[in-house]
Amino acid sequence: MDGTIQPTGSRAERRDRSTAETRASILAAARDCLLTDGYASLSTRRVADSAGVPLSQIHYHFGSKHQLVLAVLAEENERLLGRQRTMFDSPEPLWARWERACDFLDADVSSGYVRILQEMIAAGWGDAAVAAPVRALIGEWYRLLAEVARREVANGLDLGGFTPDEVAALMSTPFLGAEELILLGVTEATLPMRSALRKVGVILRLISERPPIAETT
Amino acid sequence: MDGTIQPTGSRAERRDRSTAETRASILAAARDCLLTDGYASLSTRRVADSAGVPLSQIHYHFGSKHQLVLAVLAEENERLLGRQRTMFDSPEPLWARWERACDFLDADVSSGYVRILQEMIAAGWGDAAVAAPVRALIGEWYRLLAEVARREVANGLDLGGFTPDEVAALMSTPFLGAEELILLGVTEATLPMRSALRKVGVILRLISERPPIAETT
Image (cartoon, rainbow over all chains, first blue to last red):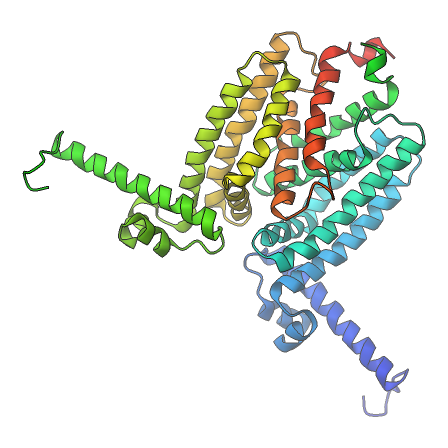
């Protein structure tokens, strides 16, 4: 470093950049370790070795192991929410976009996101300091879903007596439940969760293509 | 014991009875400790003290802490399945019985059953020896639900393209997902899970009271 290559920017800018790089390399290493070793045996020592930083840097940047995993989850969550927003913004009918959401389920299990999310939900049951940020992360999902439902209502969809927030609850809770069971090793042959979720698209179609119940009874 | 009161039965019968009593008192103590202290801080030492037995008896009867909690869960699960079977055997229409199932949600959260079930599901994600018995316990629920759906079909209900097993998946996964979020502290004001689940009764009514979709389009 000594004079041969001139670093750009002020000393403060270089320090900020270095801090951001260290943080990013720790996060990338933590993500890899989570996917390889699983959550239970995640070792911050191993994450530090893999990122090529001293262990003290993990505690400096993230505090605890839970905070580190929450930071990995927050990064993945933001990425997947972006994907989901783009998908829901498409002009396809709601039931077709629901099918696209079903397509994502196995991708998100394979990527490790689902495992990390579910582990952090479980960690939150016994730890209020974990529960609050996890509630905030999950909240972005059902706010997005409620927003999708509200837009459908604005476009004339009859939600069949359900409020947009109730639709968000019905679109998110079966996915969370199915994820739990998939992680537990419940197979589609035992309980056809994926095909059932896909057929919820049929209900969405039924609601969108039929007159309200009062008019037919 | 020495002669003043004559114990009934053979020596082997008395031994079996004593074993069953020890087991039952450990289970009752474990249940109390789980509800008071929560899962994370469950101490087998405390369970032994509370049951008035030496710690070695817990290991003799149950092996590990996980096995002990699984035994508590199995006992609760059997009791609640019995309640659910009785409820689903009633002659009310399916949507009305669904409402009864919704009534049970908060009772089962309050009783501690939901917390123990969800903790054991989470423990199963990283431990195949826990996952297998938990899958078996949960399996009894969706087999019951699929049986309910099959009986409805036999009575002429059109499941709207869903198989009985898919109906079981759609009846069980949103409850599991809602339970996770309730344990995490998500309130009904944030995400109306309970009212959304209740309105699934509306969909069940819609399916049962309307002709198949092909006839109206």
